[in-house]
Image 1 (tube, one colour):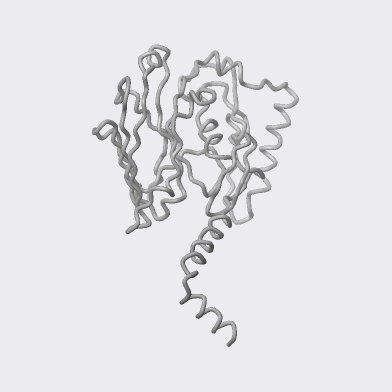
Image 2: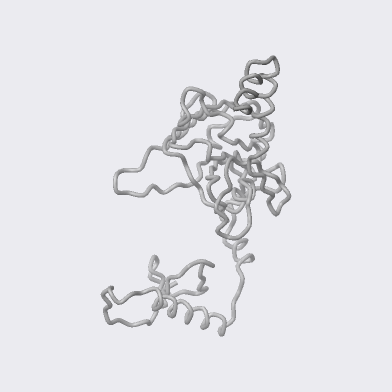
Length: 268
């Protein structure tokens, strides 16, 4: 009873607005503060799932998203970073809208060098370097619609990929307008990036070469893992573990075989 009387006196006193402001600041400080390996600190509403065991900020995830189109180093690569939680509409928590102005005085030089300007988005629910669009998105550059992301069809999974907007940009001042709709808009981050496409020769220099024994051991692990993951309820058909040396696309003999680090297909 005494605590209730004390609370009512505080609520009706002149200090009530100050106490309310202090409470809101305390809640803001209670947000998750996570530090990436690059040194950047991010304030998030909730802690993401750390599947790899460590936190990765949106900037690092944008850089690791597409090895075929590498983001330029430093500030030359990350032109703008937008956290969508800042632009949620007051009357609708499922919508966000923002306008952004930026200057590109060296756009012509970038085009001669083969560089592109892309828009990438990621979800803050996890730390995977995967492109993730919201349920619906509309993007306009300099007053013209550049692309639109629509909800996936029933029973189908949408394939989300970054979008290049270089052809719609101009040297000097540019304006970007984005509208999104999603069940939880705050969980997205958007990056405006300058990228450089990689040639096959450049990619080959970054591929790790494994010896014969390591390759045999990895294939044996894949076969053993597939046997463990199978259950007695599944239907097993007799077959051969022999792999073809022909490329399934060109049907030509493989000259330089390669396998992705996370690939679990025996044929690869």
